[in-house]
Length: 258
Length: 270
Image 1: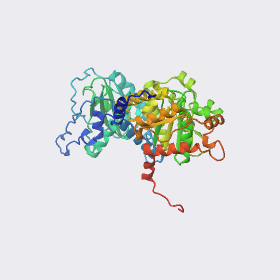
Image 2 (image 1 turned 90 degrees about the vertical axis):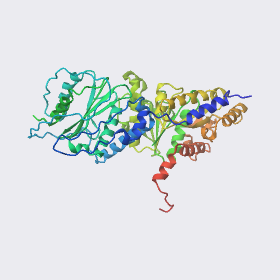
Image 3 (image 1 turned 135 degrees about the vertical axis):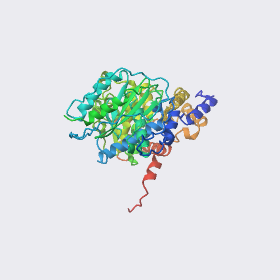
Image 4 (image 1 turned 180 degrees about the vertical axis):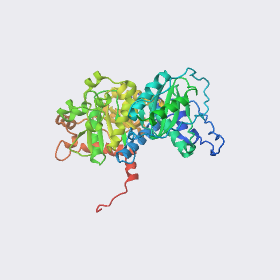
């Protein structure tokens, strides 16, 4: 007489399911093949005429939660551990280690910004109302970043946003999608670097529909403190209307000095 | 680093005893081991020292009361073995934590442990699969399933495997290191029958070769607050049981391959 009351057939089926590989998500497949996720833009010739912008990267909607995949979590954790070790060893700068104030004596007017990436998402939040001009305040970079955030927050309404530096360190803000967004932006930066797109001063925007249903917009902003990224997550994709203002405001916040 | 959780539907199957003794054996075998007590009862601490009850620990890290893992980890007389006690569960519960933040905090914990150079992180859990235990198991690379060798206990095996199957379908990559039969009574026919049935039903890779018998020395060790290997000056034979389980863990989790890949062998006189 069996005392465990375990059905052999059920057990075989259960074991089979436990041995199946963890279901991979579409998002993971994309992350697993960074070369196809972030297609390298066509080579840009620095000609006098308006330079041809990188080919639009058509992003597919991620259908499942990328955070759920164990490999991704593992990769993130390991990458973070490597970065922390490198920072501990002094090989990488500490996060939020912004350099002290320097008077920026050049009055470079940022050139008009033309977002080169075309979004394939159907609906766009209209942003037709005029925004107040941003005036950076504060003596330190962090204070001016705070003033930028105070200016941007009402303008971006329901959207969440944060600012990260070129190393992926958070300088301002938080987001419920922080991990996913950071990973995406970092991958995008790596891809852009590989294709040397920043050498032409036309850093492309990143627009993605996220698995959680929101939309990500990442705006690269070259500043004297290095390349910063303004990442905005929103329920609906943001229109292009105010993107130059956002970009110029963040650059102004970093460039200004009192 | 490899993170291993223990989990069982039923309480009193010897999870804490297993965790303490397994951690000790792994540490003796040269692995930098961190034993984390996620059971609010604080069984690990209570098994080892009276003073751990007042220490901060896992739940204080979880709720953000202390964000530096290094301040929470307790050293032991074995340099390779460190312990993160459960901490002040009630204080942490009053402070509160967002359930959705738990996976992130657990990931922070694993990352911090890896930064400390931990090779093997063992997480003791509360009985049953509550939300915290579920998060802990999902955060780990492997899970050990201690099962008391008695009929009622093993009847929950399919349920447990079903739950783990659900974890995997939800995207968690945790793998079953194996079912470990505990509290096996050599003189009991029913207990032996349970052992035989499970070993017949389940493939060898799903079952640890080593069983943990029910022995008085485990009780004595618990009473004295030591791993069974430290019960006497010369470790009793039953201490070898956990050495054997540790060796199996090394093979089943790939722990030993990791080191072999990164360390070449050294001769005796090197």
